Amino acid sequence: MASDTELAARLAHLEPLARQAGALALRHFHTRDRLGIETKRSLTDMVSAADREVEQLIRDSLRRAFPGDAILGEEYGLDPGSSGLTWVIDPIDGTAPFLAGLPGWCVSIGLTDGSAPLLGAIHAPVLDQMFLGGRGYGAALNGRPVRVTERFDLSTGLLGLGANDRVRPERLGALHGELAAAGVAWVRYGSGALMLAYVAAGRLVGYAEPRMSLWDCLAAYALIEAAGGRVAPLGAGAAGGRPFPVLGATRADFDRLAALTRFDEESWDLPGDPS
Image 1 (cartoon, rainbow, N blue to C red):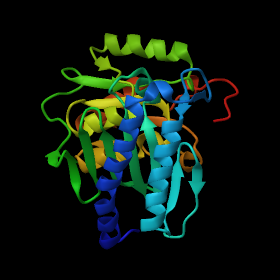
Image 2: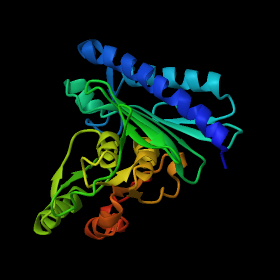
Image 3: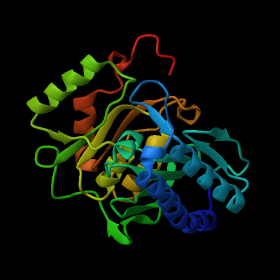
């Protein structure tokens, strides 16, 4: 278990690093027409030179500051460590909106001890939004404390909903109808990490996505718990990149959201998908 001193040192490093990474990503955003783009699993699963440069900047900074910590990133995988702590990086969550010139993307950096989220920073530079916090520290947006909403619930507020090519499209379509029948209004904003951060800030009642990777949600999970909310457990094999069901919500609405989405059912999974 990380000591208070160890966590304090890492939290102090986290905000300036996230801002530095966000500034680099923002420079690329303003010249995105010149970026080389590749696809991964599908035409909508894209990676650019900006993703790789931002992740490398974050990795280099963390290696210098905390050489014993492991680092797991979306673009460069796992560098093992000896401290028992692992940094989890999504250099640009929401690459598609980033490349399209839309503001709904962010830099996401989280810390875990392998069993639970500890710290998180999510920086959305176009929107000038910096979310920071973690276990024992609470959560803040641009330096002001935030909490999950007590004003709205799933019947009166907004649910964030994500999706990708790792699940059966017909199952997702059915969920849309089921949510409408239950009177739940939902939105989708391009970056799952950013929508999860909005749960921590009380802007969304909850967020649900049938399958995400650890780097997509770890930082925001830390923020939601620090803001008084509840998140689903990290999935088996998450540290190895295996996608798992993601839910984050107010404590009052979590069980209802889990019952509505039923993400643990195998009917969500594509046949023969090794991930």
